[in-house]
Image (cartoon, rainbow, N blue to C red):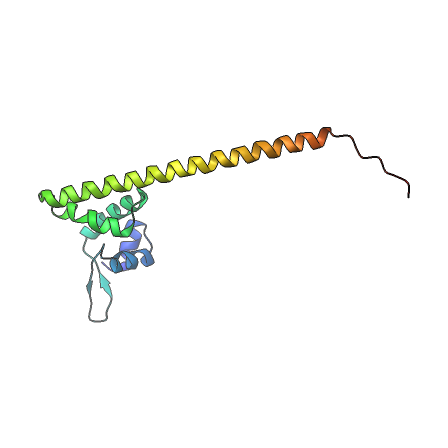
Length: 131
C-alpha cells in the first residue's frame, strides 16, 4: 500500500509516517518512480509506534524498544526494552514531581495576589486634595 492508504488506515499523517521512516521506526520499499510502498504488517507497527509515543517515549527510545516486538525470544533485547521503559517511567515521574513543585510555587503567588486584591478592595479611598 502507498503512504496515503497507510495514513488513512492508521490515522497518522503522511508527514509523521515519513518521520517514522527517517528515524528507522518504519520501513518501506520503493517503486521505480520512488513512491513508498508498505506491507499490511506496517499498519500494526504504526499503531504500536503511536502507543509508544503516547506513552511519552522519544523516537530514540522507541527505536530501542521496537526490536523487542520483532524478536520476542531474545532475552537480551527484552531486558534492554524493559530497562528503557523503566527509565522512561522514572523520567516521567521526575517531570511530574517538578511540575507539582512548580504548581505549588504558583499557588503561593496566586494566594499572595488574592490577598493583595482583598486588601485593596477594603482600603479607604484616598481623599482628593484641592490644588
